[in-house]
Length: 336
Image 1 (tube, rainbow, N blue to C red):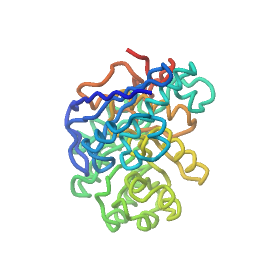
Image 2: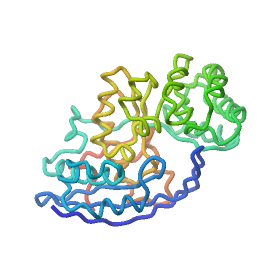
Image 3: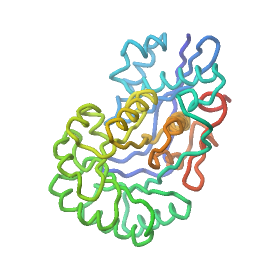
Image 4: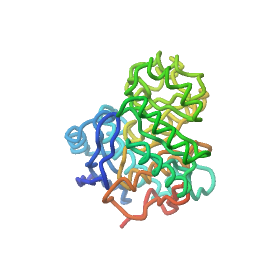
């Protein structure tokens, strides 16, 4: 089994402003494997704060000589983006060898043509935010997630009000990336419930599981993202800290790991959504296959391809009418 690594750099179409910082470029590595004569392709696109650094990712990938042993002996446990690439490449090769689309190889039952997705709107003035939400509704998105926390909380409420005034029926979600205090979240939640915000994602810092638990039951579902990564799935469940888990395959270490987390969460009575870390087309397609293998998920955060100015591949899992098309060929995406 051979492993090849190819670096890439993908500039965003415009900077994405979040409470955790500004994202302008996504850099990473394509990983190619050959398993028994069948090729497989994976992607590592690290995002510090969620994954290891670019340098740590590259070092980990270059140390892989046998994908199977690298996945089984946990040597990549501390470099989730690197593990994601090796795992996706391996699953791609195995699904190709089996002659099945990746979602069917993962355990999906029956043909799935498309999966519902949400739009994401970055920080901006109220009018700009409302314009973006209105555009998303016209494009058929069933849900829109607003990035909040970069400005004064009252200013974010103005943005929510403007968005709701233009889109009375769309599902609105907020993502604060841990920017608020518990007192701020407690003060804002009644108003957010009045605006029919469905989900408030990571309002507090990642380690604040008990405080997140206290925010639940106020008319808006509490979702954890960074909290799952920092404290772990079992700790989140033990603290009863979330109504929804946000599962990022790149940050969790692969679509195989993410699938196990989603299935375990459902058994425990906790909902889940799958989102990207503004990844390239190879990883996004893998996430689409993951969602297609898990029927009944809420609209997921997979419509991030248009955030990129250039991509690894065009026409992969395109989004139309609020849904991402599921690739139907062998493996993850068709080979070049």
